[in-house]
Length: 233
Image (cartoon, rainbow, N blue to C red; front, side, top):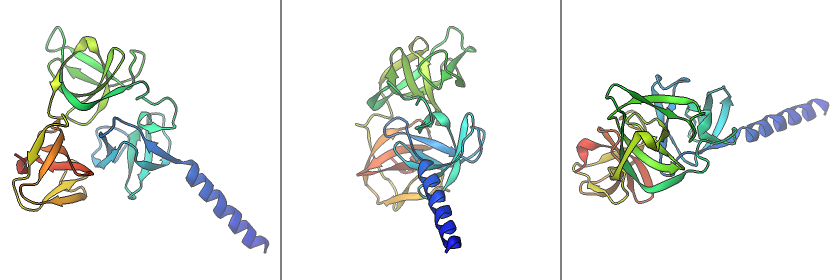
């Protein structure tokens, strides 16, 4: 009897620990970030995760945390993308209904601009971009813009160093038509990632982002994913 009670209590403890480690992804609405195979952007992607996705925290790190997605994929995301792990990078940000195009501006072409994990110059630098680099602008927080690079990295740039245009490839009013038969909408920017759905020829989709020239982020009905641009017109 005591042995059974001990097993029951152990199982209850494991279950409670699992529940305690359940978190959600918090990024720009309609956006995605890469789930990396290692703790850094140099590692390949194991698909993507979306805003609001429920994830399980496996190992907490100082900058990167290992997680498991609801569809059992494992990988790493930065702590600042996980709600509940301290101050979230998105606090106070107003997101655009459709993203805008932007370009990094510097006095000299060889100069670089810091992209930070939060809307403050005291926040850590996640990447540096050269003058003239094109980015997608997702929203604004005070005098800082939330941007996304062509590689999928999100962060904040001071308005002093960014020229913002009108609605670009990410505008929700931009549409495209599928030009081939049985085209996959995928979970990530690779043919190796899982299929969200298969679209018939001449199906119209909403283009959310053209930040990646080969893969466009699109929406069809309630489904969102990536379509190889070769099959869109």
